[in-house]
Amino acid sequence: MANPIGVGIIGAGNISDQYLTNLTSFPDVRVLAIGDLLEDRARAQAEKYAVPKAGGVDVVLDDPDIQIVVNLTIPASHVPVSEAIIAAGKHVWSEKPIGTGRDEARGMLEKADAAGVRVGIAPDTVLGPGVQTAKRAIARGDIGRPLFATTTFQWQGPEIFHPDPAFLYARGGGPLLDMGPYYVSTLVHVFGPVAAVAALGLKGTESRTVQVGPLAGTEFPVEVPSTISVLMQFEQGGQAQSLYSTDSPLRRQGIVEISGTEGTLVIPDPNTFGGEITITRALTEMVIPPAPIVQRVDDVAQEGVLTGRGLGLLDMARSIRDGRPHIATGEFGYHVLDTLLSIEEAVESRGFVTVDSTIAEAGSLGADFDPYAATL
Image 1 (cartoon, one colour):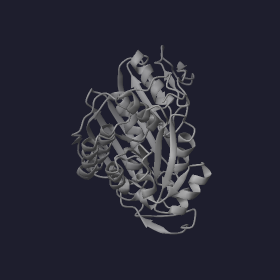
Image 2 (tube, rainbow, N blue to C red; image 1 turned 180 degrees about the vertical axis):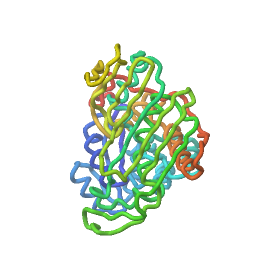
Image 3 (cartoon, rainbow, N blue to C red; image 1 turned 90 degrees about the vertical axis):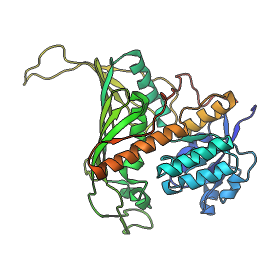
Image 4 (cartoon, helix red, strand yellow; image 1 turned 180 degrees about the horizontal axis):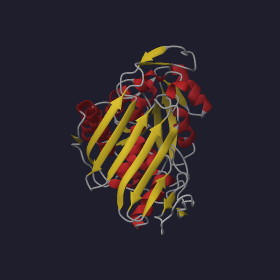
C-alpha cells in the first residue's frame, strides 16, 4: 500500500462532523464517499468537507477504492450495517457500542474473520495522549500498584442539546451504553479485563421531552435505567466503582481517579483525547483542623499529538499496512459490550454477575505516533 487508504462513511449525523474534521486532515487516509439513508444530508456533509462522492449507502459499499468504512449509525443498526460492510469486502470501523446484544456482535465478528477483514470499535479516545500518558505513568510505577478506581458521569441528559435523543434512552442506549464505553474502555486499558460486576439502577422518569430542534416539545419513553451505580472486579485484582446518570441537575463528568499504593492518578475525561493529568501523594504528617489540609500534587506532562475521533481508524489503517494488530479491536469492543450487558443483568438480579468474555492486555499507542505524518 503506497497510497493513502480509501475511507467511506455511512451515517452523516451529528458525530460525523468530528470524524470528518480529523479524517480529512490525516495524510494517510482519504475520505472518498459519504452515504446516508437521508441522501441530502450525506451530500451536504460531502460538500462541507470536500468529499468527492455522496448519496445512499451503496455509494460507499460499491466503491472499489474504499478499504475501510466508518459506521456512524445508531446503536441498533451497528451490527447490520457492519455486516453489510463486511459482505462488501471492506474493513469496519464502528462507533460504540459494537452492537446491542452478545449473539449479534459475536456473529458479526465471526463473519469478519471468515471474510478476512478487520473490525475496529470506538471509543478511540483511549488512544489519545490523555489516557496513553496515564498508562505510561502507571507502567513506570508512578503510583505504585494500582488498587481501585472511581469514575463519575452525571448530568441532566442529552435532550437539552440533541435534536432527536430518543435512541439514547432506548435499548442499546441510556447513560450506561452511551457513555459507559468511554469509562469501561479506560478502566480495561488500566486494569485489564473485567471479571465480575454488581449494580443498582433506576429511572428518574418514565418519559423525557425533546428540548431543541424541530421535535422540541415531543415526549419519548425511557426504556432503560437512567441512573446506574456499578461495582467492578478485574481479573488481575483491581476494583472500580462508577456512577452513570442523566438524572442529576449537578453536572459532574469525566471523573476518572486511579488510586495506587503510592498515589492517586487523575486521568482526563475519557470522552476527550487529552487534558490535565495529576498525581496526588499521601499526607506526610497529621493535619488537625482548622489547619488547612495540603497535599502534594504532581503534574504529569502529557505526551503525544492531540487530535480527535478517527485516531483509532488511522491506527488500524497503518496496522493493515504493517501487518500488525490494531489496538481498538472488535474483541476489545466485544468485551466492553459484554461488561455493559452484564451490568444491566446485575441491575435486574441485584447481585454479582460474571463477565464471561476476556481479552489479552490492551495495546498502547506510542508517544511518537503522529496522525499528521504521511507514512503510507
